[in-house]
Length: 245
Image 1 (cartoon, rainbow, N blue to C red):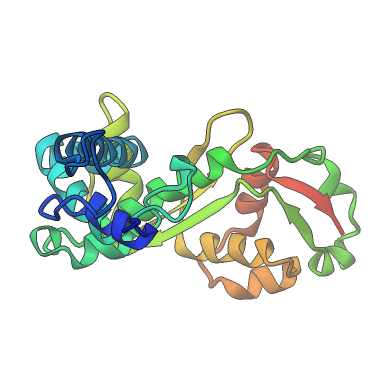
Image 2 (image 1 turned 180 degrees about the horizontal axis):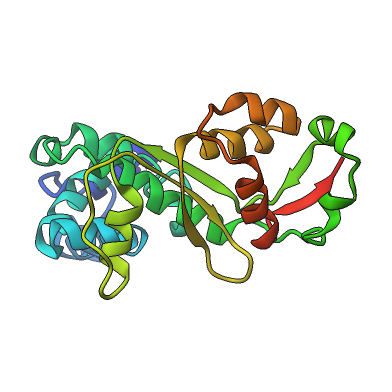
């Protein structure tokens, strides 16, 4: 009997499963030991990929706990792509439902921020406009202008201090997080993504611009806490504006 892909995948991700039919040694006996080695190597590789993708979460939870949790994750969310740099896309939803971590309500948003940092890192390059280009637009036409936003730009809005928590775990001598809502916009002016603290209105403004809507619509997406000039200044300074229409 030949082994099917479904049976092979099921057995590969379940440490209690027996070796699938058709996986045999040269003598015809089931290749139990060899399959166990392969199965363990797959689990270790996927756990390593998750640890590399979520270093802040790994630090917050501790290496031992994170790898145990990764073992549960990889069996419920096997890879959909052979590119391990994209593995872990379901982590925010998973960690929000995972019983041992449910009390840490900020963790799903930290996972979302780490995913956004990775997406920004792997996004395609884009050529920015000159920072002074927007200043050439007539004032009465400015609100109808639309901006091309670099693919690397990501936003994450949260009810928790995700910027401060992330910073405290990647920067030495960072201030202790204070429990308050925070949002971030992520840019990539060079090779590495940078994360910037921004309020929720600013993040909503950036998301509106990313959808191809006008500056007037982006302004309307915020509230009276929106500083449109500061948002545009940040995007231009970070090389995140690629076109002006």
